Image (tube, rainbow, N blue to C red; front, side, top):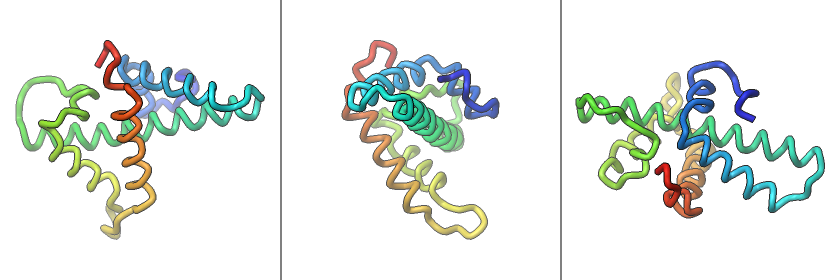
Length: 133
């Protein structure tokens, strides 16, 4: 699944970040067990997982930029830092920036709802109990 991702900045991060790969693998397993094992469903599950991973990574890049602006430290920012309570303000600002159109400065409501559901999945489906996080 990861080998089919695009070779842009987001796609490369999706294929190298260990935490994101573990989350994607667990999400894919959960979606496969819920649905039938038909060929069409398999490709749909793969596309769904890949698009969710890309959305998480693009939000993470906004979060990373925001956190670098507010706290100029030399520490590396990881994906698990996005789920920390201490960085909630940076996450809220990152969501705001990710869901605002740059040319018209209008809010993208559908993307905001999608990011909200992705964050809820991360927090509620025991992804935080992974040994990597």
